[in-house]
Image 1 (cartoon, rainbow, N blue to C red):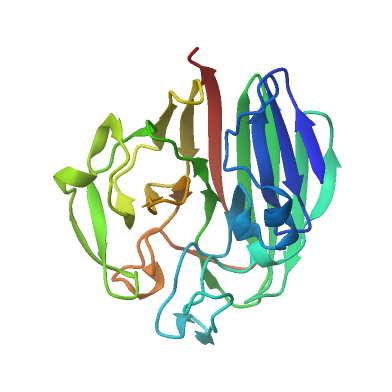
Image 2: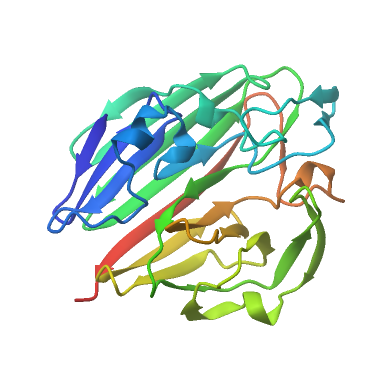
Length: 285
């Protein structure tokens, strides 16, 4: 476990478990800023049970058994209990600690799956703000399509509310793959802060300005969030699970099979893409 601290908060990172954050919490009260991972969650050995993990070299699900790169078809098998390959490969590999001090750390990954890439994940903790920079560099001889993202899980209480703007939403098919971009439905409009819905949302949203605010009155704080180098987010609001997710991502679900491959980057050998995400804790009581 890698430990970072500032005056306000305490951060625990698990490099061996996909470079994931296990816990981020307030030092004064111990209240969670990300979903709390207890000893049982840690023992499960999966980044999906923790507080936040990186998404590389794509976010969310891919259909059709793979996708086409310029050099040919790349077949993909399911990589967990989900029936479709999901979230790339970085979250299922151990990362290496390249740098560390009290308030910062740099993790690196050299991957050959599903093609050769190098990844860097930098964490900085200052004055109650956690900043994460995710960067990937293609190492394969032939170009490949890339997408990036982060998958934070946030506590959900009776009075949790969300403020985040979007211009459009991607409707999904029965496999939960994006299929159609439509004007933002009224019931999914969070431009003004509103409580999380009583139904499950599991969709990608487009036309995002990169800003979101999570209000946690029952926990005594709000999180002001800012993303860079991405114009999409995914919102997941499962019922009776005690958490929800708003994920900064570069592309919608299954972008590899959508017209124009929205949000994906075709990287040649030695070229890179990056994504940034910061969360600032503001006490409200």
